[in-house]
Image (spheres, each protein chain N blue to C red):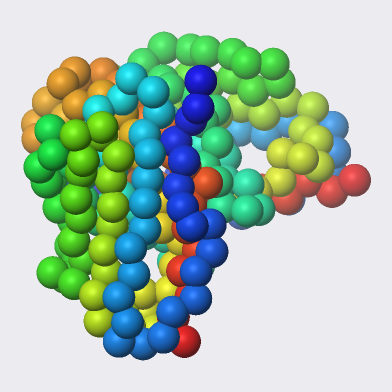
Length: 114
Length: 111
């Protein structure tokens, strides 16, 4: 049973560029959440996708956008990259239609903006 | 919104020692998990424990939901236990689908 997979694992981009990160959820899961983790901090919630729609959004600017596909996989897009966007981006999958659900995280994508 | 606090923030142990990590949360929760973040950044699931007690080898956890805290016990610590331990909670039934993470406990186990 494949767990949550993210790609790529590492990425270097230049300020002002755009980036797309990808996530495939654990088999059987239908919900994908994205988190940003800056160095030395805990993960911060970006947004959650369920039934191909953004169900909840954290305190991130509109430069951060996402998408969920019919197979439940998801993309995170960041436009007009800033140096401060350098972080570890984590994807989590869970079940969206129950209150009690365990979340599983991918290995993360480490983004460096130069 | 709900606040999550972890203590202690840092912990240094000799190999073989036992430790207790604490997570306090400010409101009722639907889901609570303990994670170990390895040096490469991956969050490893330790326990899904919104209430009750669970054990897995040298690790065990207890959540007292009515008193809004959870404890993670590590016995006979090993150097491989080093890393950051996070507690995370959500309140789905109240519309908070996101996991809110505590500030973490950074554990270093010395050989």
